Figure 1 (tube, rainbow, N blue to C red):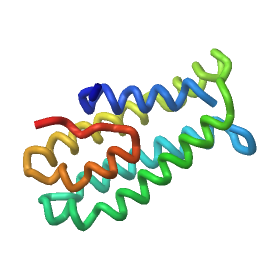
Figure 2 (figure 1 turned 180 degrees about the horizontal axis):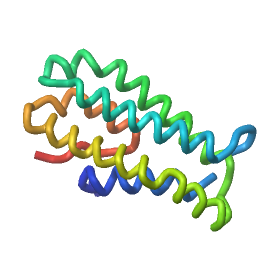
Figure 3 (figure 1 turned 60 degrees about the vertical axis):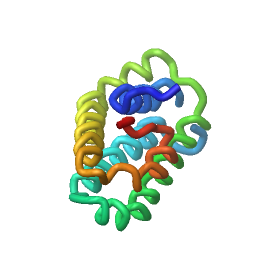
Figure 4 (figure 1 turned 30 degrees about the vertical axis):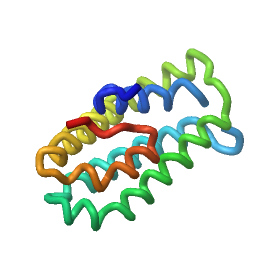
Length: 133
């Protein structure tokens, strides 16, 4: 089942907070994930057409890899306590909402200019699905 892109981004952001890693802190992993989403949104905003999208795939795949690494760190930490989860959610809520909104807006814009298809491997790597035409 494919979720609409907006739901997928929100689910990804919320999943960040539902699990917690050995060696580093949940805060550091969430910070890395949110920063990666912000950078992904900026990179998508710089794409104006299909050729730009094709040229950006490698850089975006590197960001998707960084997302996966931070996500794996979170998974290795085990489940957070409800209090820790709430604290992280409160700390990162605004940035996550903004990053998610930017991602959705840019993906929809890229779909309109036929520049989203070349980026599908990036979204798949992040566990997301691009909007369907």
